Length: 260
Image (tube, rainbow, N blue to C red):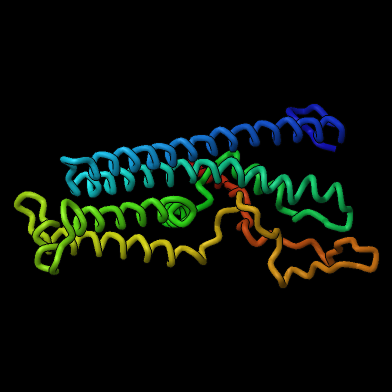
């Protein structure tokens, strides 16, 4: 029996409220998922436009470098949007694993703190993943391929147009941008691409994003399959992707002073 402002709620009323809440969080997650696609489209369109301008008759390879900086800005915007997306999808994932799955497979008991964790997330929303993980995940999924295309296009534009270079010195001379020497431009490109690859590799092991399609429990959770093919758990286990939260209990200490 649940209570709300002194009123007692039946089980059917509680389930109805959870269903509507689940649908609302699904809608939120879908909206922010569409915003992720929007920033990716911006990056693709700007890349196509920059390559068209760069490989035109009077094109300049510096346009490709400027577009690389623009794509980086889109990457940071998308990483921020991805953190918002994970905020909503983490709630959806929590209800899927600890509410609906528990009803469908009775032996699969929910975590004892799932409702309190969901309430804490509603009262004090926090991003479930860090900025670094969000950048690395979006970089591996989409933007790394865009950077590879830009790098190949920049090298091809510098080395082959208007004629093919015959020496490294000539390639370095063509890579210069105004008063910036070609060696500096090449070094910048090498460091830039290397830093992106390092970020993509270092964030591979980070799996704090609960909205991703990942197993609910770790391997040592003790979940087994019985003879009938149903999943059973010896004891209620905790999802690996969620840190258990407890609402802080505040205690007021009242001190009275007796004055004569």
